[in-house]
Image 1 (cartoon, rainbow, N blue to C red):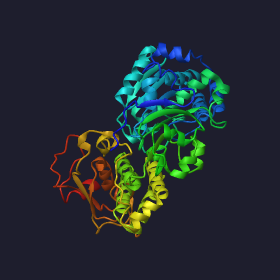
Image 2 (cartoon, rainbow, N blue to C red):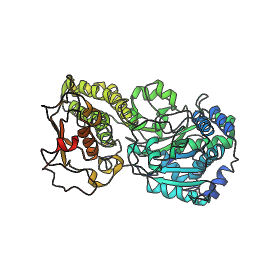
Image 3 (cartoon, rainbow, N blue to C red):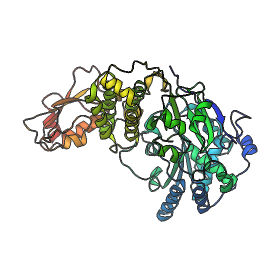
Image 4 (cartoon, helix red, strand yellow):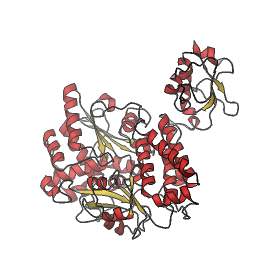
Length: 538
């Protein structure tokens, strides 16, 4: 079984180090050592900084790959137009079990990240800098780095800087989740998609990017675009940080120039000579078969061209001795657990997809396979964040990549190989989930309520399905498909709203007597049978 990766695994480099310069000298570059290794950094104006980012083709290294110069200019234009000071946010929330590159940077080279963030803050005239983290080690390292620079969150500080610690959850790393937590809310997406460049922290234009992105900007600012472009590919210059794990002898974070063959990276980590498949981009990424992986090179565009994904920089090979669908099922189940629990297609769809994959593995036949594909299609582009999209992409890629194994399970008695757990997950198979933002334990657990439909009153208005998609779906006739259902603890407030807004007064909430828990203060009031419709319909 593959154990969870440590916060700081082995670090290797191919060619000359840039981001990892000095790692051979000390475990952590404090400010004096950082300056010895990298030298001082002069500030530069906003347009000059944007041109630098554009010339080196710098794109976000957190997964989406958005051009950094466009984001920088958008924040500057919005701040000038509105006459407000922008905010700079470093996203170091690396919560995927297979990713450690940003964690390594924050733990070992925090000042390189701060260099890039402070360059942007000065160029934009920002007076607030926030670094989002989720691990104790990254919090300690970044807080120490801020103290070494004399930065703090005091009201009289020229630049107010602080670390925002959030729970370790997949959705925490979403930009909207981090902004919401900085503003004092839970670290989950807010349910509406807005551009941080226009309205982010406190409603101000916010420059938010991944930790490695700011470190890459600091390297480019020091050495200039010409020297930066001498490394890697012409149209995608520089280096990338990769986390290599899975079926490897030595899990590691490795810095490589773009254009390096993927097979060479796998060899350095001790992967099987002919892997059964290679997952690229992490658990929101895509699988490559052995032949394709053997010809691929490390770069965003090159991996996209062959059906892979650079994504968050995670590379995970699996060997011939394990069932690839079984390994993917473990990840699918974890992804389902990581839902924020506030969007029906994600909260209901991802568990349904995991169950569908389990049905395929257990001999459910072509019908089970078609049901899995349908669920994966249905969850895409319907959530408040990218989690359902990325999870669906992973599931669809699994089905496409392992056709022989899929046929053995769908049409036969399975592939006959065990599931060895080579794809890393957190201890216990997941992190605490089931409630938006990882709230108090009382918000999870068994439901205390059931919601009922009175068919003598229901007229098929459909508002219940809009308000409470976790419970109600509409059939082809426009009426709810269930007459009664448990209400998830996190959705009790929405259930109350659905009852109140039903035009026909056809809904009521009753206490589920099977739940032995007493309502805590502040919980939704439980109505006795027979009173719900009139009491809530007023």
